[in-house]
Length: 291
Image (cartoon, rainbow, N blue to C red; front, top):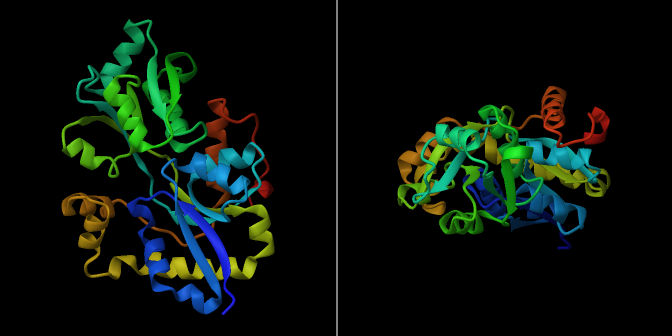
């Protein structure tokens, strides 16, 4: 059998469990597709780089990150939503930090000449873009009051916090729960994305030249995401695979909704306007460039 290899990237987190199930089923091999998964600990910023370099064909990416990348000229196209619920970002500090609450950040900006050091995985990543939105919610100017430190991934961000090189780090709160539970790190606040959090996107040449393969991949993943909650042992499966407590998984599932729908223009407009207001994109781009 002559299989056509398709490379897809995503974060090694519980949101992507349906992809694990699709790959485990080997159902796409019946369609002559060899789907190969690659973990990206560095998140959306790293996936953008890999798509542009031609190292992967598809990626499950944060909505705001991929929209910014397309606006900046990356040859990437939106395919569909993958998770339509918001992503809840935890704002994390080390246990030794003097920052214990949201109000401590506000006071630090008002009463100190020292800026807040913010660890991010990569510039243009979700941890970077959401730090801007979070700063806005605090009523502070990230361009004046934040200094961004690019660290690569979650593990290096935790080291940054422990060593005191960074003050805060934003990352999805259920992924970081084990570190908070162990009392080494604190979650001093939480901030949800104001739009659906994950989309499936692809490199432009792959999307235009391999539509039949893409349709079969979509059909496969949409079947698994749609039927995910019917699995009788889903909570224990997720808890075991992602090293979480069953109660934490249950709470996360209660606020998470997978999607099989196309990306709508209203979300693209909303994200672009927010990015433009923050100075993260130069101008609002026409909708046609995203598809």
